Amino acid sequence: MSQAGTNPEDAVAHSRSRRRFKWWKALAFGVVFAGAVAAGLFFERKPIAALLVQAYLLKYGIASSVEFEELSRGGFVAHVRVGPEMPEFSADILDVTLDYDGFLALPQISTVRLVRPVLRASFDGKRFSFGSLQPLVDEALAKQPEGPGPSVTVEQGTLYVATPAGLLQLAVDVSVDKGKLNRLSAALSPVHLRSASLSGEIKDARLAATVTNEKLNGTVSFQIAALSSSASPDMESKDLEGNIDITGAGWRNTNNSLDIAAVKTTLAIKSASLNNSQNSAVQPELKLAVENPRARVSNGTIDVVAPRIVAGLHLAGFQAPEIATARSDAQLVLESVQAHLTGDAGDFAAQHANMTLAVDSFKSTQAKAGNSEIRLDIDALKTSYDGRAFRGSGRAEAATEFRRFSFGPHSVNVLLSTPPRTTRVGNGLIRLPRLQPHCTPVLTPERCAIG
Image 1: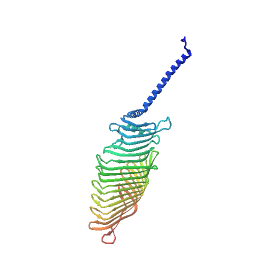
Image 2: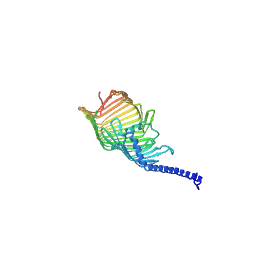
Image 3: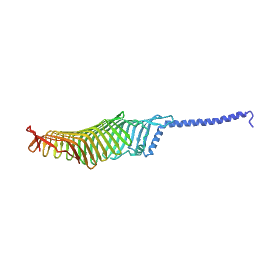
């Protein structure tokens, strides 16, 4: 029975109001708690994200230190150290932007910017190793690429490579746009390299490459103060300089083969001296130019074609055990060149080959001469090498001229020539047809034949 003066309906309403108030308090508490957790996660998202990254790398046994400077849905900026006390990788700034296909979609990396990154690796002569990062590298290389990839920029990077001959340090800057190279530059710091059979003092080495309209233009240059090798054949060179230029190069992968083409490739190398145990050359200078080369690399074979190859060699002087020369210039011109290489064997062919050698003067143990010139023309040149022997053939014409050629008390001008005939080449010796010599005595204008 209800108390006097109390309405039963009011009592029921009051009881329901108290229950609703408890539910609203619980709901409000839940909302406040969730907000506090969300706020805590938001304000502490940087250390939490750092812990997640460190935990991921720890699965591969990789110690790391990550400090986020900025972190949002659109990307992040962080300082990274990966590896032991001397980290294999570190970056003062790792700036990453993210893209989303939809509101609830997983993010995709759009751009990566590395400022003053440092990467340490080693090379034992056969393969590269990245220390504690190797499991992560192996897994990345084993995956098939998905899409073009992000745009990557490396600014003021440093690459250390430990080799058996010494430690290499390179300054690197790279720009890659969705998996395609835009720009690459690398500079090697001065270093003295030494191994069991090789010693070199490198003053400078640089690489610069740019890609425009999917065509690569690149330059490699180097300066070496001293270079020596005790391997066979032994060699020693001073003040060696070189430059390689590639213009308009492009490449394409098709059916397990790599096709490479370029507009022009040039090579220039010179030094103050080049010596070995038996011979010495003063100020040698080599130049090579290959026009419109095309190459295909497939299943261990290399096929090369080029319309024209020009090579030149200049010497200020040359000394051998039985002969010495003053200034000399040699040039080789090859036209319509084809080459097929497999392992240590190969075939080489040229529609036409021309070689000239001009010498200011030379002397040997039995003779000497003033200005002299040798010319050799070969049509339909074909050569092959099977790893043991060298063979070849072609239609050859040769001419040799010696001015003031002296042997004993005699001094004459000599012209040796041969008409075009088929020529065989074997074991490095060219078997020319019988020469037709003629001579002119130096002191008289008459021309005489030498039997």
